[in-house]
Length: 134
Image (cartoon, rainbow, N blue to C red):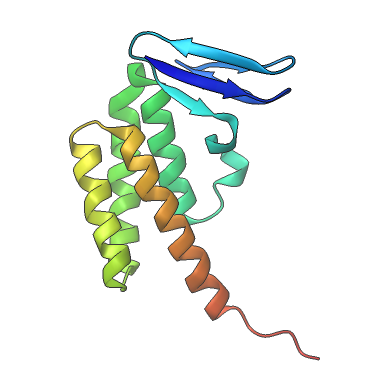
């Protein structure tokens, strides 16, 4: 049993359906379901980097298991390119964990690894960005 507390206006996706609370709400989920809080949902427009595209494909595999093979193909293509670009041992460890979870079709846990990869990618891109001229 899973208890989810929502603030007024907060969104949650349950098995692909987007729900928005009106007022504070508590939802009790009594069986297995694909659940993501609104803050964990990524739109295609937000998937503007390799790690974010990987997250989006993984999120869609989690929320839309009817089209799983399509998303798995996307994940494999994106993952290979991302893994080749990663250098830091900690990021490689997240990649390995991500791949393990995807192989087990545990996309919810794979999303957690993807969040770490997004953070890693952001740090790398910040370091590579040219400093603004003063």
